Image (spheres, each protein chain N blue to C red):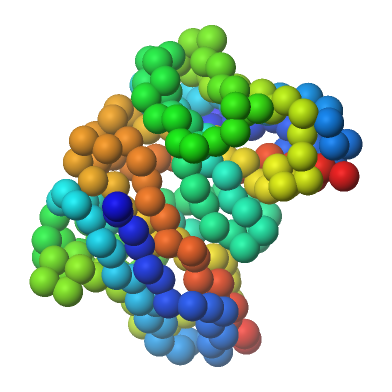
Length: 114
Length: 112
């Protein structure tokens, strides 16, 4: 009965490769997010989708492309991976777009680029 | 822009000690405030939240009060346990914004 799940949990790859991370939520939420957590544990939002529509796109390199096939899924595709992309990527979801609403996080995907 | 400042860690305490982790914020709107906890190797979990001034959020013995006059949301617990060892994040979200803005996190280690 996992609420927000991500695959894979760990991803080790070479520079220059293309990889995808998948996220699914079974909470019936309308809004989903991708966050990046760097080696110092700092968390920053990357993207947000509401009902499959992109609503937040922070200053992220265009090598990163989110895709939302339906409102329960938000995948993250990364082209031409670089060393600096090594981080933990968290998916999250919330019922809607309101400021009071809680965001529920997935377990994270630990990406290491060699 | 909106920002959250947390006390620098790491914080190391003995079991049953009193815990305070300071958090102050800057926001252009009227934010909701959150504390999230990240246990080793896991994702973030909501610990508590407060959505308006003078609200107190509480959960698992942790408390934080939304202080608009001092723009603060300090986390406290009267008696910590080894199982409280984790990284604690203060965060805000202003009305009409989808973004959670996080502080840099404070690592807490509780020794037996």
